[in-house]
Image 1: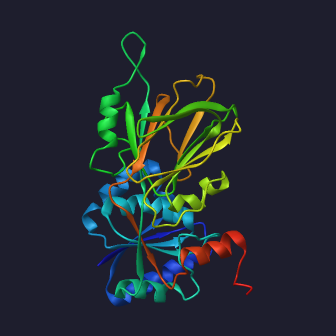
Image 2 (image 1 turned 30 degrees about the vertical axis):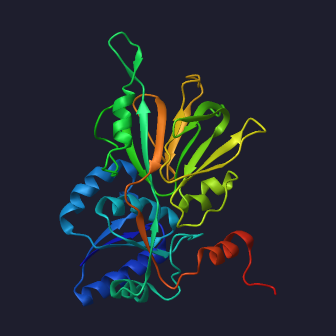
Image 3 (image 1 turned 135 degrees about the horizontal axis):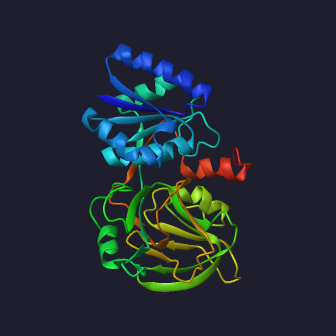
Length: 319
Protein backbone atom coordinates (compact mmCIF):
# COMPACT_ATOMS: atom_id res chain seq x y z
CA UNK A 1 0.00 0.00 0.00
CA UNK A 2 1.13 3.55 -0.77
CA UNK A 3 -0.65 6.53 0.79
CA UNK A 4 -0.55 10.09 -0.49
CA UNK A 5 -0.66 12.59 2.38
CA UNK A 6 -1.65 16.16 1.55
CA UNK A 7 -1.35 18.59 4.44
CA UNK A 8 -2.35 22.22 4.78
CA UNK A 9 1.10 23.60 5.43
CA UNK A 10 -0.31 26.87 6.80
CA UNK A 11 -2.16 25.03 9.60
CA UNK A 12 -0.04 24.06 12.65
CA UNK A 13 -2.55 21.40 13.72
CA UNK A 14 -2.40 19.75 10.31
CA UNK A 15 1.40 19.79 10.43
CA UNK A 16 1.42 18.13 13.87
CA UNK A 17 -1.09 15.53 12.69
CA UNK A 18 1.12 14.79 9.69
CA UNK A 19 4.09 14.05 11.96
CA UNK A 20 1.97 11.62 14.01
CA UNK A 21 0.64 9.95 10.87
CA UNK A 22 4.10 9.50 9.35
CA UNK A 23 5.33 7.91 12.58
CA UNK A 24 2.36 5.51 12.57
CA UNK A 25 2.81 4.53 8.93
CA UNK A 26 6.54 3.96 9.45
CA UNK A 27 5.72 1.60 12.30
CA UNK A 28 3.23 -0.29 10.14
CA UNK A 29 5.62 -0.52 7.19
CA UNK A 30 3.27 1.42 4.93
CA UNK A 31 4.80 3.60 2.21
CA UNK A 32 3.70 7.21 1.89
CA UNK A 33 4.38 10.44 0.02
CA UNK A 34 3.80 13.84 1.61
CA UNK A 35 2.76 16.96 -0.31
CA UNK A 36 2.03 20.43 1.00
CA UNK A 37 -1.25 21.96 -0.16
CA UNK A 38 0.65 24.77 -1.85
CA UNK A 39 2.28 22.26 -4.21
CA UNK A 40 -0.93 21.00 -5.81
CA UNK A 41 -2.32 24.04 -7.58
CA UNK A 42 -3.47 24.00 -11.19
CA UNK A 43 -0.13 25.22 -12.55
CA UNK A 44 1.80 22.28 -11.09
CA UNK A 45 -0.68 19.52 -11.93
CA UNK A 46 1.10 17.98 -14.91
CA UNK A 47 4.48 17.73 -13.15
CA UNK A 48 2.92 16.22 -10.03
CA UNK A 49 1.07 13.55 -11.99
CA UNK A 50 4.30 12.56 -13.70
CA UNK A 51 6.15 12.35 -10.36
CA UNK A 52 3.44 10.23 -8.74
CA UNK A 53 2.70 7.98 -11.71
CA UNK A 54 5.03 5.18 -10.63
CA UNK A 55 4.06 5.03 -6.96
CA UNK A 56 0.88 2.91 -7.31
CA UNK A 57 -1.13 5.09 -4.94
CA UNK A 58 -4.01 3.49 -3.02
CA UNK A 59 -5.38 6.30 -0.87
CA UNK A 60 -5.14 10.08 -0.41
CA UNK A 61 -5.26 11.35 3.19
CA UNK A 62 -5.98 15.08 3.39
CA UNK A 63 -5.07 16.97 6.55
CA UNK A 64 -6.87 20.29 6.18
CA UNK A 65 -10.21 21.75 5.23
CA UNK A 66 -12.50 21.59 2.23
CA UNK A 67 -10.19 23.73 0.08
CA UNK A 68 -7.33 21.25 0.47
CA UNK A 69 -9.69 18.39 -0.37
CA UNK A 70 -10.84 20.16 -3.55
CA UNK A 71 -7.25 20.53 -4.74
CA UNK A 72 -6.46 16.93 -3.88
CA UNK A 73 -9.55 15.73 -5.75
CA UNK A 74 -7.89 16.55 -9.08
CA UNK A 75 -4.96 14.26 -8.26
CA UNK A 76 -7.26 11.59 -6.85
CA UNK A 77 -9.27 11.68 -10.07
CA UNK A 78 -6.13 11.22 -12.15
CA UNK A 79 -5.14 8.08 -10.21
CA UNK A 80 -8.68 6.88 -9.36
CA UNK A 81 -8.04 6.68 -5.61
CA UNK A 82 -10.37 7.55 -2.69
CA UNK A 83 -9.91 10.58 -0.46
CA UNK A 84 -9.96 10.46 3.34
CA UNK A 85 -10.30 14.04 4.54
CA UNK A 86 -9.60 14.94 8.17
CA UNK A 87 -10.74 18.42 9.10
CA UNK A 88 -8.27 20.98 10.38
CA UNK A 89 -9.97 23.85 8.57
CA UNK A 90 -13.15 25.84 9.15
CA UNK A 91 -16.41 24.46 7.73
CA UNK A 92 -15.16 20.97 6.88
CA UNK A 93 -18.28 19.90 5.01
CA UNK A 94 -16.29 17.38 2.94
CA UNK A 95 -13.93 16.25 5.68
CA UNK A 96 -14.22 13.97 8.70
CA UNK A 97 -14.00 15.36 12.21
CA UNK A 98 -10.53 15.13 13.72
CA UNK A 99 -11.86 14.49 17.24
CA UNK A 100 -10.88 10.79 17.33
CA UNK A 101 -7.35 11.55 16.18
CA UNK A 102 -5.66 11.08 12.85
CA UNK A 103 -4.23 7.61 13.61
CA UNK A 104 -7.59 6.08 14.57
CA UNK A 105 -9.25 7.51 11.47
CA UNK A 106 -6.54 6.38 9.05
CA UNK A 107 -6.38 2.94 10.68
CA UNK A 108 -10.12 2.56 10.18
CA UNK A 109 -9.77 3.50 6.51
CA UNK A 110 -6.96 0.99 5.98
CA UNK A 111 -9.07 -1.70 7.65
CA UNK A 112 -12.08 -0.83 5.47
CA UNK A 113 -14.14 0.38 8.43
CA UNK A 114 -15.41 3.47 6.59
CA UNK A 115 -18.18 4.33 4.15
CA UNK A 116 -17.32 5.30 0.58
CA UNK A 117 -19.42 8.05 -1.00
CA UNK A 118 -19.38 8.45 -4.78
CA UNK A 119 -19.60 12.11 -5.78
CA UNK A 120 -20.24 13.45 -9.27
CA UNK A 121 -17.63 15.85 -10.62
CA UNK A 122 -17.33 18.11 -13.66
CA UNK A 123 -15.53 18.01 -16.98
CA UNK A 124 -15.05 21.63 -18.06
CA UNK A 125 -13.86 22.58 -21.55
CA UNK A 126 -13.02 26.22 -22.20
CA UNK A 127 -12.89 27.32 -25.84
CA UNK A 128 -10.68 30.34 -26.51
CA UNK A 129 -10.63 32.72 -29.45
CA UNK A 130 -7.67 32.32 -31.81
CA UNK A 131 -6.55 34.66 -34.57
CA UNK A 132 -6.09 33.56 -38.19
CA UNK A 133 -3.56 34.95 -40.65
CA UNK A 134 -5.80 37.97 -41.31
CA UNK A 135 -6.25 38.70 -37.62
CA UNK A 136 -9.83 37.42 -37.49
CA UNK A 137 -11.07 35.38 -34.55
CA UNK A 138 -11.41 31.67 -35.26
CA UNK A 139 -12.15 28.52 -33.33
CA UNK A 140 -12.97 24.95 -34.35
CA UNK A 141 -16.12 24.18 -32.37
CA UNK A 142 -16.35 20.63 -33.76
CA UNK A 143 -12.90 19.91 -32.31
CA UNK A 144 -13.96 21.46 -29.01
CA UNK A 145 -17.11 19.31 -28.83
CA UNK A 146 -15.07 16.17 -29.51
CA UNK A 147 -12.94 17.13 -26.52
CA UNK A 148 -16.05 17.72 -24.40
CA UNK A 149 -17.26 14.17 -24.99
CA UNK A 150 -13.85 12.46 -24.96
CA UNK A 151 -13.53 9.41 -22.72
CA UNK A 152 -10.48 10.73 -20.86
CA UNK A 153 -11.80 13.03 -18.14
CA UNK A 154 -8.42 13.93 -16.73
CA UNK A 155 -7.43 17.54 -16.67
CA UNK A 156 -5.48 18.65 -19.73
CA UNK A 157 -4.78 22.28 -18.88
CA UNK A 158 -1.58 22.41 -20.93
CA UNK A 159 -2.28 19.73 -23.53
CA UNK A 160 -4.16 19.46 -26.82
CA UNK A 161 -5.21 22.30 -29.07
CA UNK A 162 -4.33 25.84 -27.97
CA UNK A 163 -7.92 26.80 -28.80
CA UNK A 164 -9.39 24.87 -25.87
CA UNK A 165 -8.39 23.57 -22.46
CA UNK A 166 -9.95 20.85 -20.32
CA UNK A 167 -10.29 20.93 -16.53
CA UNK A 168 -11.61 18.83 -13.66
CA UNK A 169 -13.78 20.25 -10.86
CA UNK A 170 -15.38 18.66 -7.82
CA UNK A 171 -17.37 21.68 -6.62
CA UNK A 172 -17.99 24.10 -9.46
CA UNK A 173 -16.89 26.22 -12.35
CA UNK A 174 -17.68 29.89 -11.85
CA UNK A 175 -17.57 32.69 -14.39
CA UNK A 176 -17.59 36.15 -12.87
CA UNK A 177 -16.93 39.75 -13.76
CA UNK A 178 -13.23 40.54 -13.83
CA UNK A 179 -10.98 43.02 -12.07
CA UNK A 180 -12.60 46.02 -13.79
CA UNK A 181 -15.82 45.20 -11.92
CA UNK A 182 -18.18 45.65 -14.89
CA UNK A 183 -21.15 43.29 -15.20
CA UNK A 184 -20.90 40.78 -18.04
CA UNK A 185 -23.16 39.45 -20.79
CA UNK A 186 -23.45 35.76 -21.63
CA UNK A 187 -25.80 33.24 -23.18
CA UNK A 188 -26.88 30.00 -21.50
CA UNK A 189 -27.93 26.79 -23.27
CA UNK A 190 -28.52 23.32 -21.87
CA UNK A 191 -28.35 20.28 -24.16
CA UNK A 192 -28.85 22.40 -27.30
CA UNK A 193 -31.87 24.20 -25.84
CA UNK A 194 -31.28 27.95 -25.59
CA UNK A 195 -32.30 29.18 -22.12
CA UNK A 196 -31.57 32.90 -21.98
CA UNK A 197 -29.22 35.79 -22.61
CA UNK A 198 -28.12 37.01 -19.22
CA UNK A 199 -26.48 40.08 -17.78
CA UNK A 200 -25.04 40.18 -14.30
CA UNK A 201 -22.09 39.23 -12.09
CA UNK A 202 -21.79 35.75 -13.59
CA UNK A 203 -22.86 32.12 -13.39
CA UNK A 204 -22.00 29.06 -11.33
CA UNK A 205 -22.31 25.48 -12.62
CA UNK A 206 -21.96 23.12 -9.67
CA UNK A 207 -22.21 19.49 -8.69
CA UNK A 208 -24.33 18.33 -5.76
CA UNK A 209 -21.12 18.54 -3.71
CA UNK A 210 -20.68 22.16 -4.82
CA UNK A 211 -24.30 22.99 -4.05
CA UNK A 212 -23.23 23.71 -0.46
CA UNK A 213 -20.51 26.16 -1.57
CA UNK A 214 -20.56 29.10 -4.01
CA UNK A 215 -23.82 27.98 -5.61
CA UNK A 216 -25.56 28.10 -2.22
CA UNK A 217 -24.26 31.62 -1.58
CA UNK A 218 -25.64 32.68 -4.97
CA UNK A 219 -29.13 31.44 -4.05
CA UNK A 220 -28.99 27.87 -5.32
CA UNK A 221 -30.58 24.86 -3.61
CA UNK A 222 -29.05 22.38 -1.19
CA UNK A 223 -28.75 19.12 -3.15
CA UNK A 224 -28.22 15.65 -1.66
CA UNK A 225 -24.66 14.48 -2.41
CA UNK A 226 -25.68 11.35 -4.30
CA UNK A 227 -27.42 13.41 -7.01
CA UNK A 228 -25.45 13.00 -10.23
CA UNK A 229 -26.66 16.03 -12.18
CA UNK A 230 -25.72 19.70 -12.37
CA UNK A 231 -26.89 22.88 -10.64
CA UNK A 232 -26.83 26.09 -12.72
CA UNK A 233 -27.09 29.30 -10.68
CA UNK A 234 -26.89 32.90 -12.00
CA UNK A 235 -24.90 35.29 -9.78
CA UNK A 236 -26.60 38.64 -9.10
CA UNK A 237 -28.50 38.65 -12.45
CA UNK A 238 -29.74 42.02 -13.72
CA UNK A 239 -33.30 40.72 -14.14
CA UNK A 240 -36.32 39.64 -12.09
CA UNK A 241 -36.87 36.49 -14.15
CA UNK A 242 -33.73 34.48 -13.38
CA UNK A 243 -33.90 31.11 -11.61
CA UNK A 244 -31.51 28.34 -10.62
CA UNK A 245 -31.79 25.21 -12.76
CA UNK A 246 -31.21 21.63 -11.64
CA UNK A 247 -30.06 19.73 -14.74
CA UNK A 248 -29.79 16.00 -15.45
CA UNK A 249 -26.63 13.91 -15.31
CA UNK A 250 -26.42 13.61 -19.10
CA UNK A 251 -27.00 17.31 -19.83
CA UNK A 252 -24.41 19.59 -21.39
CA UNK A 253 -24.30 23.18 -20.19
CA UNK A 254 -22.95 25.70 -22.70
CA UNK A 255 -22.08 29.31 -21.83
CA UNK A 256 -21.34 31.71 -24.68
CA UNK A 257 -19.61 35.08 -24.40
CA UNK A 258 -20.37 36.19 -27.97
CA UNK A 259 -22.46 39.16 -26.77
CA UNK A 260 -19.94 40.31 -24.19
CA UNK A 261 -17.95 43.44 -25.06
CA UNK A 262 -14.15 42.97 -24.87
CA UNK A 263 -13.91 45.71 -22.23
CA UNK A 264 -16.13 43.67 -19.90
CA UNK A 265 -13.53 41.29 -18.54
CA UNK A 266 -14.57 37.72 -17.62
CA UNK A 267 -12.82 35.69 -14.94
CA UNK A 268 -13.14 31.89 -14.77
CA UNK A 269 -12.58 29.86 -11.61
CA UNK A 270 -12.34 26.10 -11.07
CA UNK A 271 -13.03 25.15 -7.44
CA UNK A 272 -11.91 28.62 -6.41
CA UNK A 273 -8.71 28.75 -8.48
CA UNK A 274 -8.39 31.37 -11.21
CA UNK A 275 -7.79 30.10 -14.74
CA UNK A 276 -5.40 31.94 -17.04
CA UNK A 277 -5.51 31.94 -20.85
CA UNK A 278 -3.45 33.45 -23.65
CA UNK A 279 -6.59 34.54 -25.48
CA UNK A 280 -10.11 35.44 -24.39
CA UNK A 281 -12.55 32.57 -23.63
CA UNK A 282 -15.43 32.41 -26.11
CA UNK A 283 -17.43 29.46 -24.75
CA UNK A 284 -17.46 27.15 -21.75
CA UNK A 285 -18.88 23.63 -21.88
CA UNK A 286 -19.69 21.74 -18.69
CA UNK A 287 -20.83 18.16 -18.22
CA UNK A 288 -20.53 15.48 -15.55
CA UNK A 289 -17.22 13.65 -15.42
CA UNK A 290 -16.76 10.06 -16.55
CA UNK A 291 -15.87 8.61 -13.15
CA UNK A 292 -16.97 9.76 -9.68
CA UNK A 293 -14.82 11.12 -6.89
CA UNK A 294 -14.69 8.77 -3.91
CA UNK A 295 -14.85 10.28 -0.41
CA UNK A 296 -14.32 8.06 2.63
CA UNK A 297 -16.53 8.77 5.64
CA UNK A 298 -15.64 7.89 9.25
CA UNK A 299 -18.48 7.99 11.82
CA UNK A 300 -20.14 10.58 9.61
CA UNK A 301 -23.53 12.20 10.14
CA UNK A 302 -25.98 11.88 7.29
CA UNK A 303 -26.19 14.75 4.81
CA UNK A 304 -29.40 16.19 6.23
CA UNK A 305 -28.23 16.03 9.84
CA UNK A 306 -24.98 17.72 8.86
CA UNK A 307 -26.80 20.35 6.80
CA UNK A 308 -29.16 21.03 9.69
CA UNK A 309 -26.22 21.71 12.00
CA UNK A 310 -24.12 23.74 9.58
CA UNK A 311 -26.73 25.77 7.69
CA UNK A 312 -29.75 25.88 9.99
CA UNK A 313 -28.07 25.83 13.42
CA UNK A 314 -30.15 22.84 14.54
CA UNK A 315 -28.31 20.63 17.03
CA UNK A 316 -31.33 18.41 17.73
CA UNK A 317 -35.07 18.08 17.20
CA UNK A 318 -36.76 20.34 19.79
CA UNK A 319 -39.66 17.89 19.96
